[in-house]
Image 1 (cartoon, helix red, strand yellow):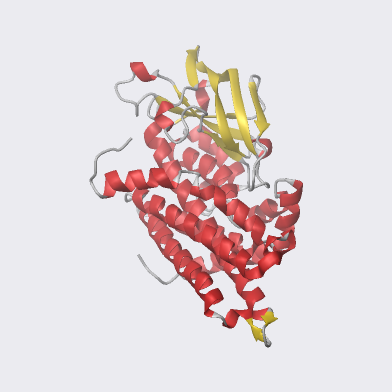
Image 2: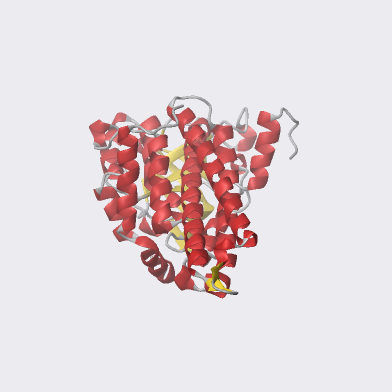
Length: 389
């Protein structure tokens, strides 16, 4: 792994920073207030060619890797969008692009990858009310129906359904009790949002308001035989690739959010003078919390680069992606909280932006995987300890 960016990577990072600067925190404050999808921002990202970096050149992408994707996300997040920018790159470039690129049929790739490279939104319906993080316990079931399937079930906390054209659905095609192992009998399908029997309703929530989260219901939804992604019953292995890259995108956005919060806090502290005209940034009691946040954000950044590099080089990256996400979520929460404290009362005001960054970042200690489950993963996979749940 090189610690110096290539000329291409520097150009990509600079382009992302330039695109993000065209919008800035005020734009995101407005979108958050209206609870509207950041369409203008996403269109600018796509126009700059930043949405299709994972898509092969033959389908209109630039055929780069997760390392470049992480650079794009963290730089866009640092200009104003914060942690929710990572979710934007999940719904489409990862949930759709990566899944179809790696596991789709030639016909599916030809049809969908050019659209995804140009910004088509693809949600992923995985989480269920009675399964939560334990994805192997999902109950949504696709029953054989002629050459296709009939889908029934319910999902929750599904991001971006109102902006999406397609949704990647994770469903059982073999009942748990009939499968040789729990990891068998899961399948992936990519279907239209506007389909008979598919309904969704938004969940009112604390933050990440520019991207909706929904309850999703499937009532005898028809799935065509051509909409299967990958191997029937082999979806668990396919899903792991998608989930690891989802964590890398989330971490990159949290790094950007932490960087922005620290910048806002430092700028305020340098400008604010009390008790004899000294800037409040000259007091160690205020310096140390933001210095600590900086240290943790940079640690998360480096671990995320390692995870992305491992993934791009086709090496196991699950542990690194999970650890990076855990560190980044804690770091972003610390950075936003300390910046808010640094600003005093103004830190609680929407015009100062850190309260939005704080609300958005808090989600990622819970999602896309909770920190408790990451500790379980590390204990078993890295430390060789017995399963605790």
